[in-house]
Length: 208
Image (cartoon, rainbow, N blue to C red; front, side, top):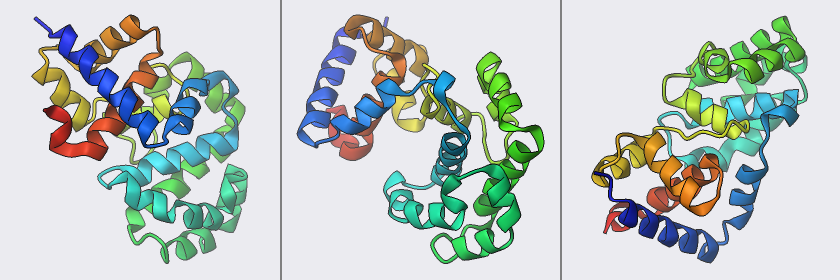
């Protein structure tokens, strides 16, 4: 049986941590994300962010993301990125040397440019996981990360959430986050972010 009491206690600690660390704006951003209002620059930016973060610490990507954004036309449009290739790709290597990830960003821009953002957004709204899962460098875990960042009310089954879910007797991260969300009248995507931030920033101490 899942230990709901411990899960709620951990979430309370996570909320307290987020407040003391001055991260309320990050939580407010996640709470207000809405897939219906996603535009092309937002889509390109969030896709690039998730691609770059895959297998890397978020803090590492955060330090270079502004520079990478400038190289990729500040995500103005997919056509602008495609039109500026290969210069955008080459210049971004000065800030981030993983060529396969930078190449994936270019490939995503090409897909958006070819399909047209309106068509892509319609697919995103009707079938988000399948649509996003077809993008290069977006895998079975990162697809949920990208969906959440684009406003889908879901959680990402990353190692932190999977570990704590199992430790507290939940079947998976979805069950864990949904239980806390219902008890706190919060969207699942907010529960995911708050708990993930607490666990990622505090390491083993968060599990005590």
